[in-house]
Image (cartoon, rainbow, N blue to C red):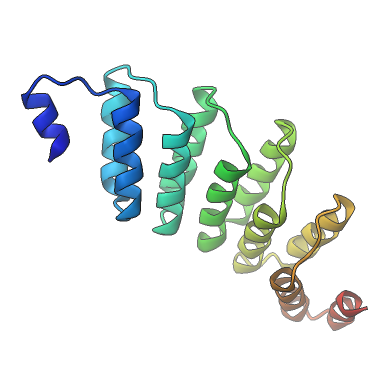
Amino acid sequence: VYLADMAANHVELNTIICSSTVHACSKGGEWTQILELLANSKASQMHVDAFSYTTAVSTCSKAGKWVEALGLLHEMVASRSPLDVVTYGAALSACGKGGRWVEALAILDGMAARRVESNIVTYNSAVIACNKGGEWARSLELSVEMAANHVKLDSAMYGVAISACEKGGVWTRALDFLS
């Protein structure tokens, strides 16, 4: 409504207004409105800042819209927008919710290539994606990778890793996590 009023009053959309509107829409879970606003911003050749993109990725992720979240991540990469662990974490969360393990592993690889350090949140989402996608062995590999990268497993991660062992029928590996 406000954006239509702005247009009627010849007020030009700018990065600050866009960012504020994306943030407000995010609070209400209005991912479709955010995508429309970003599309209009890009169509008018306006720069969309990393904060707006990250907020949009997060909002799509919370809504379970992994396709849209990953599309925004790809737009950020294409536009050379700065990517941080928060942005990647939101995209990985979307992968986790959707069981999109291939995409999750590709995002982890992209993080490493861009020297963005993974943390418990990013790994946890990737492990969940692998578990939901039936890739229990890969989720266990990620648990080992976490330890190698000095990322401390929390109780939720131990639970996910032990669940992967159960799904894979490798109960002896589950005991390894307890020792």
